[in-house]
Length: 136
Image (cartoon, rainbow, N blue to C red; front, side):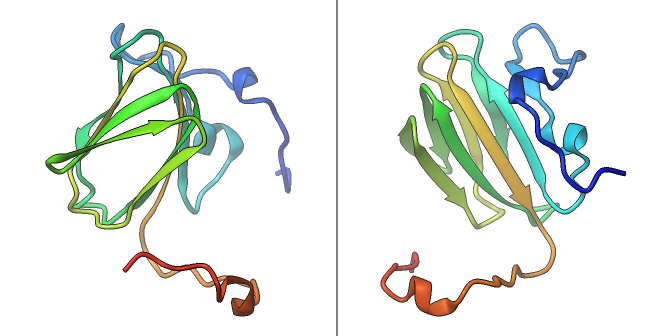
C-alpha cells in the first residue's frame, strides 16, 4: 500500500450512482484510502443545486468542516442562514445542528471534512496559537 498519494481532484472518478439532481461527487476519502476522517468534494452543476442535503450528525457524533473552494453557497444551520463565498469556512462542532447547503453559483465547489470519535491532539506548540481566539 502506498504511504502517500498525490493527485488532482478532477482525476478522481466521481460517484456514478448519484441521481440526476445531485452535484458531482469526488469521494476523496475512498479514492485516497483515508480511514480516520471523511473527506469529499461536491461541485454544483447549476445554480440552486443542493450540495448538502438537510441532516444532522446526532447518530454519528461527527463534527464537520465545510470549505467553499470556488463559488458561493447558502448554508442553513438550524434556523439561521449563512452565505459562504470562496475561501470561507463553517465548522459545525455540535452534531445536533441541522445543516444543508445549496449553490448560489453553478460550479460552486465545496470541500467537506468530518470526523467523530476521540479528541484530536495537536503536535504543534501551543504558543503558536496564544493570540488566536477560540469560539466561545
